[in-house]
Length: 157
Image 1 (cartoon, helix red, strand yellow):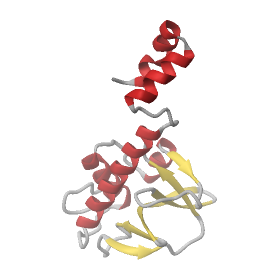
Image 2: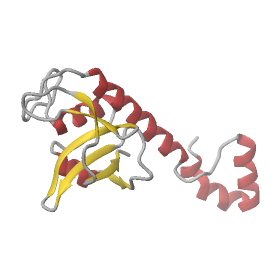
Image 3: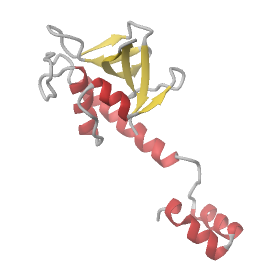
């Protein structure tokens, strides 16, 4: 039973104290976003594993997998196979997701590299200052340290 969906009805019929007692006895918590946060974290962790499984795949501009990737093609492929759709380009992905601070970043978040002109690259945060990404022509999907301070972070919800 979805408590969030039925809470207004429960409150109206049983009264606030009785409804909260029923929820507590049933073992359901009312923490804001708790289930959604756990779902997003599981999807991000899966996307991170999928990106890592593509280690060594060649970079190809415009490629979206399963054997060749560009940067946004890798993030799109990884999240699609984890259960979430992302737009095609790095800039569109940045505009599509929830932005988080550097302090709030966690493994599985997206890392967007930018200049004053906008976003030009994206990877998936792997923790300890590293990302999985498809860097450039002639390179392969790899784990690499974040090389710039001009980055923004985002979380796929």
